[in-house]
Image 1 (spheres, rainbow, N blue to C red):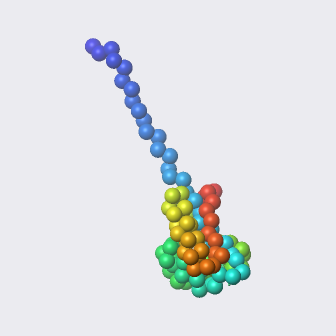
Image 2 (cartoon, protein in one colour):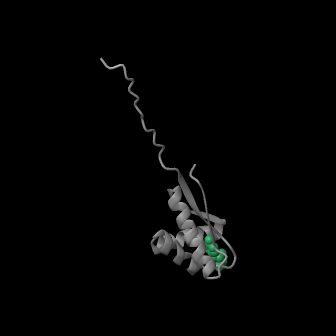
Image 3 (cartoon, rainbow, N blue to C red):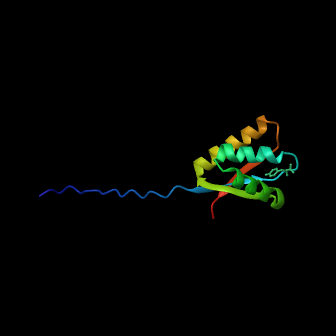
Length: 98
Ligand code: TYC
């Protein structure tokens, strides 16, 4: 009979944290540019992109989408870099999903 103790390790994997990507309004970025960035970076169709742009324009901000945290950060940085390189003040940010 063995006297060795067996240790069982149960992996407790937390579901990946999710983050909202939020589009912020500003007074200078052309509306068409906002729609183009939404389409290119977030793969959003033209009508939905226009609606998100318009909501941010009238309300001050709009949730673009919810992604796993690393995806949200990457897409947010990509969109902000595109805007900066084009010389626009357009800003995207992330915040934890509720
Ligand atoms: N408010 C900008 C304008 O009047 C357009 C705009 C819309 C900018 C949405 C940013 O998130 C934004 N040209």
